[in-house]
Length: 324
Ligand code: NAD
Ligand code: MLT
Image (tube, rainbow, N blue to C red; front, side):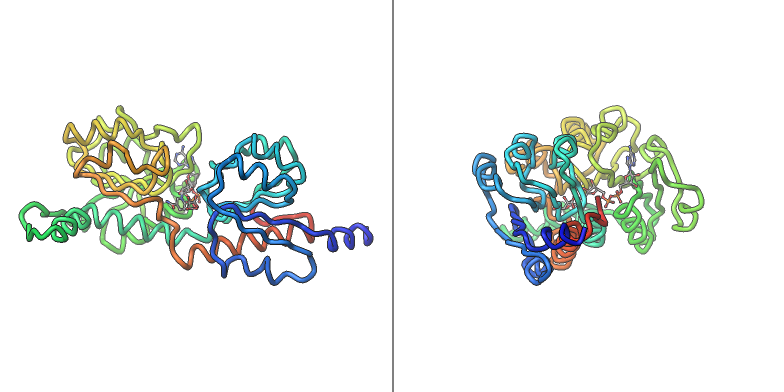
């Protein structure tokens, strides 16, 4: 056992970073002295280039730009661990990783606050037409008539998916004096009461909420969770926010619901296909959007990279991880 530990500690472990990560966040890897970690940073590669470059690496570390497919996993014969500097592991083929005995770790807490703050910023911008008004003003027009907004106070916010980010969004929305309804299969009546929210079904949220925000992972059960049928139940003039994952809200159905006047506006940080520079939803004046910026703060990026770096070190020292 002792010999095994020494062998593990002296062997070079190649850690390949394929997406831009916070330099401060990967310091634990650089400062590690017991393990011989060789940190390689090479971002923006095509799948073909990536396959070639990771043939001999033990660790692949990504954010959300790189899709770690079965093909890529099967080219990395020495791969032992895939690290995801963020929450969603939907860009990693988990089945293929499991089949090849590769452990996948993520950073579930590090960007919670940033994602919640971004959601609130998007909801407020949506309510007050801030991006549209700014754009008009930048184009030299002082237009006060077109941008009359609505208040958040006394409005009902429906939160679908009440995990880390959903709960933080609810907490902040209550600070804006909104009434909050929440749906999550794991939400207990006690926790809802403790957080001052009303436990509800998706249908109840759809029929009663003025603003609806989704915070679930993208899973087979959550894909198209908000669709044509759900839009039909909603109040006229409802506003929709998605800072979780493209596809939880059916994009075609959202587009139609906006054209029909059912939905007054939508704030989107995520899309089914990213980058989404040429998307029909972006042609609608009722839609405001950001390019997947929910976790893009200095603090969150440092935090997720530190968490995942520490888990890589823990794995090679102890064989266990904190966030499998
Ligand atoms: P979390 O795991 O803490 O919470 C997710 C919640 O969704 C859980 O409570 C779970 O019970 C619930 N859920 C699962 N299936 C559901 C269903 N069918 N209906 C309703 N609820 C369901 O995750 P989190 O940290 O809160 O992240 C939520 C989402 O936000 C993830 O998709 C994540 O990838 C995304 N995210 C996006 C950004 C961004 O940059 N835009 C940043 C961070 C996280
Ligand atoms: C996440 O799931 O953590 C987000 O997509 C954030 C990101 O990595 O950009």
